[in-house]
Image (cartoon, rainbow, N blue to C red):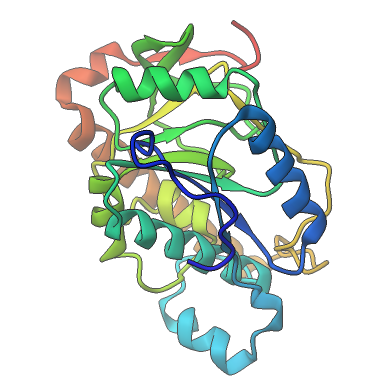
Length: 274
């Protein structure tokens, strides 16, 4: 794989760490390398796809307009971001390890993360995808408490966020995702968590989160355009997709956790609170 900086020790590679980074973004690459080196964790850079450099024809090939399941324009950066994540999921699916951790290059990792990984390797809770960071946009979430790990709560989610900042996939989950996610039809977080293109995934979160995303830094996916400025036709399409996803969301949750899980769901407050 391109961009390798550290190799995985044979005896300690239960959860390899992959960092998605554009080869041209040296500053972020140095910052992420410094974090993981300080934590004493092996990792590997995977060169991201810079969709901003792709031609219109190339973008149409990987993200055909006729297949879009999104109400707004997809920027080249968003398409490249999706391709980068899909390549990383493919690497986990094809690899020899039971888990794979994926980080974007604009996050801050807690000093407690190495111990968290060690505890996870020894006693993994039931999950297919584990969020290590959460989106700050919503103040409440419907959750189902599952377990404790390294002093943090592990909770299943009904409403999934717009984030792919830091996650751990099981190899089995990655293999389930590889087949259906061959074409970019929306931003990658929408494809994974809103469209539920692979229903029944056991998606859990870590609370309090152990990775924090930099929401104030410059974006490499928006291309400087206001992609959410949409007209009446797109607004109608947005509402239709939203209602369709509402049905998919609850169906996926029940498929993942069983019908009885609905009785265990409760409303959680702001995630920064204990």
